[in-house]
Image (cartoon, rainbow, N blue to C red):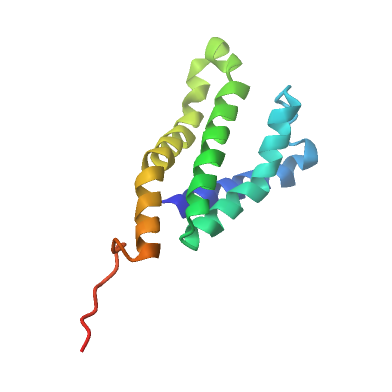
Length: 130
């Protein structure tokens, strides 16, 4: 699920940059949000690669990027809460994905750490030795 979410995020941000260029996020008045959303073209695939390689750093990066992405989207679009709350429904998928990533961060980190030290088998088949 992590890989699917971050790959979709990468594609979404690349599509935004193809359509709008470096100013694709100019609708956000905060320059920091504009820079962050552009940086997701690098951060999303980096998180996907590190998670795909089953690296603990990838889990923490994925969590940090997701928390920042969800927060930035809600903060940057907060005026819609007053103007037309129904338009915020498009934030639901990213919010649910963010909750999923954060909820699984610690258990997944433990499983990966345990598998790296040999203490906990991580969803692998135990092959008997002959």
